[in-house]
Image 1 (cartoon, rainbow, N blue to C red):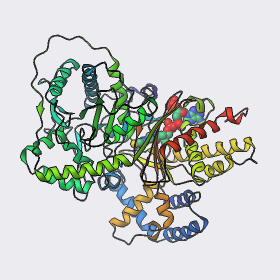
Image 2 (cartoon, protein in one colour; image 1 turned 90 degrees about the vertical axis):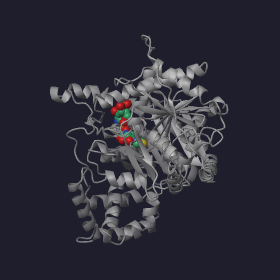
Image 3 (cartoon, protein in one colour; image 1 turned 30 degrees about the vertical axis):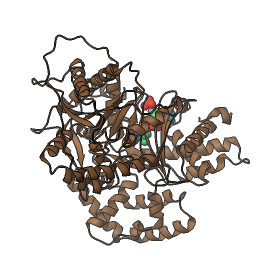
Image 4 (cartoon, rainbow, N blue to C red; image 1 turned 180 degrees about the vertical axis):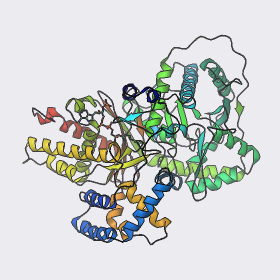
Length: 620
Ligand code: COA
C-alpha cells in the first residue's frame, strides 16, 4: 500500500515505474566520513567493553585517524573504489559474507521460513496445494519477467529491486576456496523447468508449454502425481545431503560427483531449474506448543538424515517445502538475496493458493517428468556418509524455539507513537541483560536497498542509552517515570541509528569498517592494529544476531541460526495484534537456551507495556 500511494503522487512517467533489474535514479551507496565512523565506533563500544579496553582502543583510533595516516589512505582507496564501481560494497559483501564463508550453508547461513499449517485431507490435497503453489510462484515470476512488479518503498524512498532478479534459476556452486553463484534466468541457457524432489529422488519438471505459457495447476498436479508414483521407494541414497556439508568438503565431493557424465547432467539440471519443490515425508508428530519450532527446524535443516535433510539441494536459492502432514515453508540460500524480497514472494504465493481453482478446457497429455539419475560410486557413498554424520551433529546441536507473543502486536507501540521495531529491540536488550547481567554486541540487519545494488548494514542495538534503560529497569529505587524516560530515550537512539543506516544517508559504521579492513588487504598494507584489537573482536562477536522480516498478510516467521557458538539468532515478524519470534541457539553451549530467552523476552515485553507501568501518558 505504501508503494501504491507513493506512486499516485508521481508524474505519469514515473507512475509507470515498475521494477526493472535496477531501479532507475537510485543514489549510489556513499562512503561515510572517516572521522564520523571512528567516533561512532567508540560510542558503540562503550556499553560492551571495559573502560580499560575502551581507553586502549581510543589510542588505536587516534593513531588510525591521524592526518596523513593509514586511515586516510584507506579511506581514499575506498572513495576511488566508489567512483569506479556501481556499489563499492556489494561485490565485497557477497564474497565476504557468503561465498568465502566456509561453514555449511545449513543452519549457519541459509534462513528458513515457517508458513501457516495447511489442512490437507490426503496426499491428493498435498499435491493439489503444491501444484497451486507452483502456479503462484510462476505468476510472481511473470511479474518479474515482464517488469510489472511495482517498485517497493521504505520510509517513502524507492528501493533497489535487483534482488528479485537474482532469486530464480540461480544456484550456489561450491568451490575449494570460495563458492560462486550461477544464474540462468536470462539468455539461451534458461530452461523452463523446476526440480521436484520426493523420497530423496530428483525430477526435472517442465512448467512451461512449448508456446511459452506456464502450465496451470491442474496440469502440474497430474505431473506431480506421476512423480510421486515413480518415487515410492524410500531406500534411495540421500544425495542432496552432500549440500549440507562444510563448503570445502562439499567442493571436493562435488568435483568427485560430477566426474560421472550422468551425475553431471543431473546436477546441472538442478542448478538450472527455476526453483525446487520438496515433497517431504511426514515428520514425527509434535504437540501444539512445539509444532512451529519443529517446522522451523525442518525448514532450516530437514530434520536429519533419517528424515528430510536428503530431500533438499541446499545450494539452490529457493526451495519450497510441502510435507504430507501439512507443514510447509521455505529454505533459501542467502547469497543472492535478503529476506524481504523472499517473503514478498511468499506472501504472493500464499494468497494465490487461496484463490479458487478455475475449471479449464481439456488438456493435452504432457510428457513424463524426467527422473534425474545418479551413479553412486563407493567414493560418493563415502562422502554421503560423512555428510550425514556432520549434518546429524548439527541437527542435534540446533536449539530452536518459535513463539508467538499474544498480548499485543505492532499496533500497541504504534498507537503510543513508538516505533515497534525499537520497542522489540529494547525488549531483547532487557531480556538479554536479565539473563546475563551485561549487554552484548547486538546486530540488527537494516536495509541499504535505497541505494543502487544495496544489501544491508548493521544497527547496533546495544547502545549507551539501552544500557542505562536495562540497568534501571529492575532497580527498586527507580521510579517508573524514570524508567519510562530511559526507555523512551533508548528507543529514540535506536530509531536514530536506523535512520543513519537507511532512511538518511547510509552512514552506519559496520560496512564502512569492513570496507577499510578489506581495502587494507587489497592494498597489501599491514593490517591496522585497530582491526587486531580485542575490542574489535568483541564488537564483531554478535551474541545477539537479530532481524525483523515483516509481512502483514501471511502469518509467517523467518528463522536462522546464531552467528557465534555462544549466541542467539532472533528473527521476528510483528503482526498487528501479535508478534512471531524464532529464536535459535546451540545446545553445545551451556550458557545459551532458546526457550529461556523466549521466556525472558515475553516478560520483558510485558514489563515494558503500560499495564505494568500503570503510567498515564506513557510514550507521549
Ligand atoms: N509512531 C507511530 N508509528 C510508528 C512510529 C512512531 N513513532 N515509528 C514507526 N511507526 C510505524 C511505521 O510507520 C510502520 O508502519 P506500518 O506498519 O504501517 O508500515 C511501523 O510502525 C513499523 O515501523 P518500525 O517498527 O519502526 O520499523 P521499520 O518498518 O521502520 O523497520 C527496519 C525498521 C530496520 C527493520 C527496516 O528499516 C529494515 O531495514 N528492514 C529490512 C530488514 C532486512 O533487510 N533484513 C534482512 C533479513 S535477511
